[in-house]
Amino acid sequence: MAHVELTDLVKEFDDVTAVDGISLDIPDESFTVLVGPSGCGKTTTLRLIAGLERATDGEIRIGENVVNDARAYERDIAMVFQNYALYPHKTVRDNMRFGLEQHDTDEEIITERVRETAELLQIEELLERRPSELSGGQQQRVALGRAIVRDPAVFLMDEPLSNLDAKLRVQMRAELNKLHEELSTTTVYVTHDQVEAMTLADQIAVMDNGQIQQVGEPTHVYSNPRNMFVAGFLGSPSMNFLEGTLEESSAGKFELDLGGAIHNVPDEFTDALSSYLGDRVTLGIRPENIALNQDGVPANVHPATVEVVEPQGEKTVLELELETGQSIKAAVDPDTTVEMGDAVNLRFDRDSLQYFDPATGESLTYDAKIEQQATI
Image (cartoon, rainbow, N blue to C red; front, top):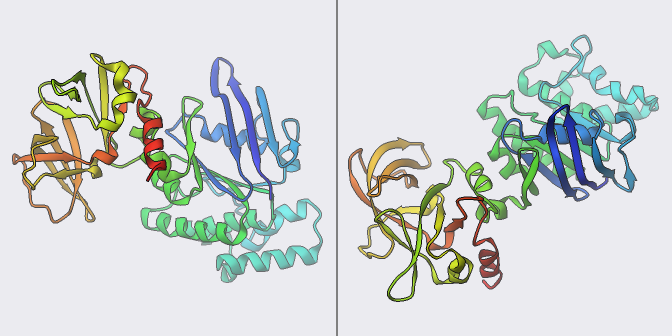
C-alpha cells in the first residue's frame, strides 16, 4: 500500500495546459475520485500518475519514492481502463495471469492469486472463456481481476463503469465499494459521473480547466462548495443561482433584492457579506432544499408559477418561474400534487443557503458555514 502525493503538477501539450499546477495528497488506503467535466484534466492526471504521460513540471510521489522518471511498470500500479483492454485471443485465466507472467512471478503464486481473485469476484466459471463470450459486466470483472492479482500499491481506474448500462453501473458501484473494503488498496478513480464520485469516494477532488477546485469528503464538498463551479457541478438537478443586490433594511438586517422579491439574509452571514453592501451577490440554493410553503409564515416566501412537472419516482422536479422572471428548480415529495400553471409559494431552507461573488464565483460564506457547523 502507498500514499500518492502530487505537488505543483503541470502537463502541457504544445500550447494547451491540460494540468495546471495541481497539488493533491491521496492518503494510503483511501478511495480518491477525480471528478469533473470532459476536458478538465482528470484523465491526464491519472495518466501522469501511471507513467503513461511525462510531467512537464512538478513532482509525483508514490510512497516514499519520487517517480517522475520511473517507467510505468516500475511504479507498482495497476490500471483499469474504460474499454477494459482485454486480450481477445486469451482466456479469462490467461488475461488475469499475463501481468504476473511478465514480471516472472512464480507459477504457484500466479495460480493461487488467480484462483483467489476469481473467487473474490465470483468469476470462477468464466476462467476458460474468451472476452467475446462475456457480457459487459463480466468483462469489467475480468479487468478488475487482472488488476487485483497484481497486488499493486495503487489502483488507477479510468471511468471503468462508463460502458455499462445504468442498472449494472449501480451494481458494480456496490461491488467496487465491497472490494475496496476488503483490499484496502489506495485507489485513484476518474469519472465525470457525480453519483459515482459521491457514492464511491473517501475524498473527491473536483477539477475544471486543469485545476483542482476543491478537495474533501463528498458530503462536505456537496454541502459547502468553495465556488459556483463546484456548487453547480455536483447535484442533479444542479444548484439554483439567483443574483441580486445586497441591501440593509430599516431594521438593520441584510436582505437581497432579487429584482423586486426580497430575500432575508440570515444574521450569521452578516459579517461575511458586510463588504458587499450595495453590490451584486449570488444566492445559491439546491432544489432539494426548497419546499412548497404551506404554513402561512410570510418570511422568506417566494411566490412562483409552475412551468414544468417532472415525476422521477423518488422525487418530483418542478421547474418554476419566480415573480422576478428568474427560473428555479425544486425537488419535492413525489406525492406533491401540483400542475403546470399553478401558483405556489417557495420556502428556502436557511441552513442550506449559499452566497457567492458573481464576478469571481467564489463562496462568500464558506468559512462562516464551517465555523457554524463546528459549533453544532
